[in-house]
Image (cartoon, rainbow, N blue to C red; front, side, top):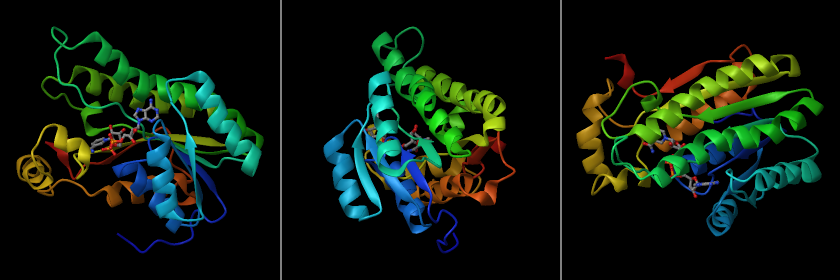
Length: 253
Ligand SMILES: NC(=O)c1ccc[n+]([C@@H]2O[C@H](COP(=O)([O-])OP(=O)(O)OC[C@H]3O[C@@H](n4cnc5c(N)ncnc54)[C@H](O)[C@@H]3O)[C@@H](O)[C@H]2O)c1
């Protein structure tokens, strides 16, 4: 990875699910690249603690992406405090629940789809007009390599992430004339607490999942942070309606 530069200097970026792991890494890199970041999460205490660690360029905002009113209030905070929003990263995700269509608890299906897919829809409903008012911006929907390829007993997660990848294309078409670029970003497995739902340690997760990635290892949160900051920046000015796979080659074979 290159040293952070100033490619997001003066930009205001909002990140959902910013209280843990990949969200923190995205916020950290955006700030290192010059942005002011609104760290939003359903868990305000965790978001506040993240924002404290990140310093004066971070602001914690409570936001449940599944609630229209909460989405409206979070984006209003950006408007009232900064008068603009240059970037939005939809990174929030529900806890992983394994299951096939036969045995997955329908409540878990709804939770997954609500946070990932419906959440992106609800947040974008308010993000788009604010970006349009100030000449445009960049939206990044964090999907997954599992939005491209199937995994056993992962119907809710895979279907929601596949939906996000296509939602990014649809939004890109609708809002190009507003100066808004929309892309999805699909990580492979990344060293985060999320993997501890299935593995007893991150080293075990790396040993088991790493070989499925061409690079022979799982990713680091910082590698996702750097890729998200790239998509948010003018370095990606001719990139829209695409999915950036940051998966160590997982989907290539
Ligand atoms: N970790 C991986 O291996 C991996 C791989 C591919 C994709 N991803 C994706 O990257 C993103 C971040 O992953 P992570 O590992 O950091 O996940 P994580 O579970 O650590 O973080 C998810 C965050 O979303 C927040 N959240 C949950 N419900 C919410 C809601 N209704 N409103 C607002 N916030 C809510 C949680 O509080 C948490 O802070 C997710 O979208 C995930 O699907 C992760």
